[in-house]
Length: 382
Image (cartoon, rainbow, N blue to C red; front, side, top):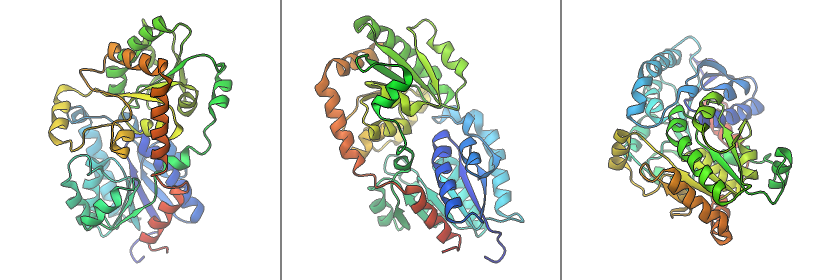
């Protein structure tokens, strides 16, 4: 520990990373409250006891061309964190959480500063940009894998890796049942409910919520009495959602109640992302959609190594949930898929059966504590 303080730097750059990082912070504090936690994250990690040097989670973007506008801000954040790696309170270990474009550059700086690097929720090298594994082998001391199929991939590449399970397993333990969620929202068991999960980034709301709104109008015309609930991410201004829902049917916007929305719904219209894995683990049928800019979609088609984008399909290795791309992510297509699932109990049950299979592959609860033990071992506290 010579030359280092009893401090751990953690770095997350998106809402989902902040959520998982908060769980890890709580676990670290529970195992050894004597460590100072500091770095980049969001409100969740701050509430869990981390000293926040910088927060970029509210401005996270998706896609290559969309990210250009954030470069100056991210570069300032990078410079500040890089300086902290060499500062008076040099951390004993750097913990990276997802956000690979930024975090792999920081891993290089940490290695040069002599700080070991643990990568929690590592880059999806199995899906795209497989060349990243070489960078990880050079600069990362330990990968903490969250999907079981990642472990052999990293081991074959010569990267130290441990499977800890997916952090969502911890976060979903306290989620209400369907009955509790509906009772809390004042919805009886016979009412058809569709949940809208348009994403945690500004661009996702702009590009996808109008299509969800139009789909809701068509569903309501075909199935009168259907209720619509929107799970608003903490990174999204309510006024933005209201603006893009204008002209559609009534939609109840619920901030901070995404899990209740997922549980209460018969069906979800969801933007591709971590929330689709949450929905799968909670057993709610869904349709997944996403829409990048034309440039970003072209880039994605060039580098993607798998045929799906949703985590449920990727994890199971087959098409379990419908995925609607840029050209097909329209109100008409969403409505058609939604009405099929609403009126076909067999189609919904097929998704639920696959989701049960998926849940059994992701490990057991206690992920935060397992990950924290590995982090502390790397920090020299074993």
